Image (tube, rainbow, N blue to C red; front, side, top):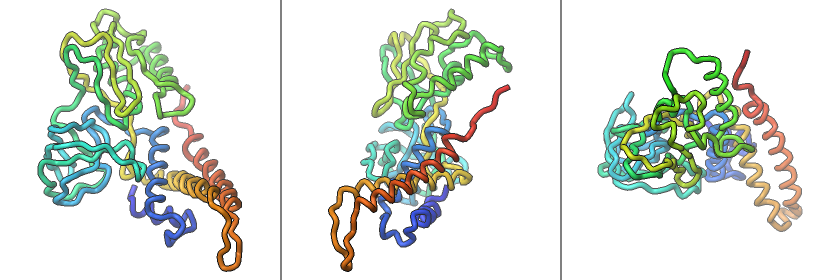
Length: 321
C-alpha cells in the first residue's frame, strides 16, 4: 500500500482535500489505527527473528524504524535481502513515542549510516533467527507486534507432536481447526482471552518427549513475553512463526478501500470527540454549535464502521466440508 496515495485518497474520503480539517498528524494516526485493526483480522506471518522496515530510510540514515524481530542492541541484521541487501549493526533501540499511532514499531540507531535507500515494507532478518532458550532462564521477550504463534510451526519447534508426516489424521485436523478458531490470542479478536496458554495440552503429542511436560505461556505486555515452566535444563533454539501486525506498506493494495473506510471512521470519531468539548462561538455572525457538529460526525462515522464490518469483519475467511 502506497502511503502517499493512501493519504490523498483519505483526504478525499473525508471531504477535506486541502487538509484544513484533518491535519497530517490526524490522518497518519487514523491510517495506523486502520492498519492495526486490519491486522487483527488478517495478520502477517513472520518468522521469529525477522520483520519489516516500517518507514522508508534514505541513504545515510543513522536510524531506521522496524517492526518484528525482536531486535536488540548488538544485533547484526540484513536489510532488504532481495533488492538492496545491506548488513547493519544495531547500536541502541528506542520504543516509539506513539504520537503517530505506530505503537508496535521500534527505532533502531545504527553503528554506521545506511549506504542505500530501504523502502517501507521491505524485510529484514537477524543474523540468527529463532528464539534462543538458555539454561535456567524462564522468560523471553517477544516482538512488540506479536499476536499469537503459528500453532503448527510452534508445535514442531517444541517437539509436541509424536511424528510429522505429509498428511494429517482426522483427529489432527479437528484439533488444528478448533485451536485456530478458539485460541485467537490477545489483540486479535475482541471477546476472546489470551490463546495458546499451554502447549502441553496438545492431544496429538507423543507424551514421551521432554517438551510434553513443559508449559509455554504467551503473556501480553510491553513487550509480550514467553514464559517456560519449568525453567529449561538444556539450551535450544525454537525456530517458529508468529502472527503479527502489518505496517502500511505491507497491506495489500486490494484492501485499500476497506482501510480507507476504517481510517475515515477513526478520523471522524476523533474529531467528534474534540468538537463535543468545545463551547459555541460566533463565526461571521453565525453561531457554531459544536455538539451538532459532533453528532453529525458520529452518525457519518457509524455508517463507515458498518461498511468496514461488511468488507472485513463479516467477510468469510474459511470454508469447510
